[in-house]
Length: 407
Image (cartoon, rainbow, N blue to C red):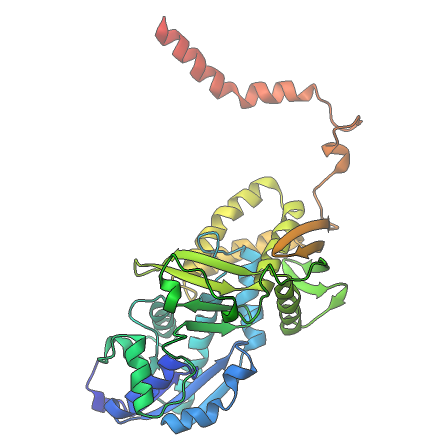
């Protein structure tokens, strides 16, 4: 990093949480520069955004931008992930990873508008977010100066950060009793740290905000129909909805039925195994529903190859490579597979379980007359003999060769 005196104006990714609140104050003390706080609304909720402007300015910001990017986040980031069935390590639905590139993009917009010298983020030196933010910044503005607070200051733990905040009268919601690192947006809420770091500890039900525990969930199941057009969810229970309303509605419905809690030991990009607990009710339902519509509308070979692509696409997002040529290339393939992923599925939600009740698509490749075990006039069972002989020819040749070697 160049001389601190070269930095006159910084745009900071600001959430109002512990790390960014302390970081904003620390920047003022050590860089003696103007700090512009930039908060991107990706659906973290009214409580998270309440009085954020006032809080930022009390902490030292000269100006605050609060940008509503919820719809763009859903259309340009979440929908591509749904179409790809992108799930990292078969469990993580990428809530935080998907939000970082759009946050970075909006911050760079403000950097250009304000003619700032640098950007700053509050991601720790152990996590994935430092990579996600910084790769996005570099992709969008290659020569921008990046200040990574956790790699510069003397604060070594969240406990020390809490102490720093208290000494300077910075209002924070995190305490030593509830030291969770939490990230919320319309797609999920994550919880890390605190007693979750001990793998022998279960999570506290009081921690959750979007989901009911299975024990307290309704004893009456909920039924919901979801319609897709070219891989994108467009309607719930025959009612077309905006992207924001659709996900918000599903968060409430699925969450009330105990759907969407995920407890993961995940492999971070930096090489550390970490435990993350997530709430993602709408995400869980939409991934499930989308896969079911694909199962009837995409041919076998394309579907199997897409499953390979899905894992790689998820890894790319997790690693912070959203603005990469490979992701763009894979997305082109994925979009081509979604041409006929149009239809409706009815799901049963009950105490944390999702069950498919019905599936339909005008492009369905399922043919009851072919699939039936009853008598039919479409399929000739005798045709299978020739198919098996040809398909198994290599296997037969291998076996004959082994017999010849034994003789």
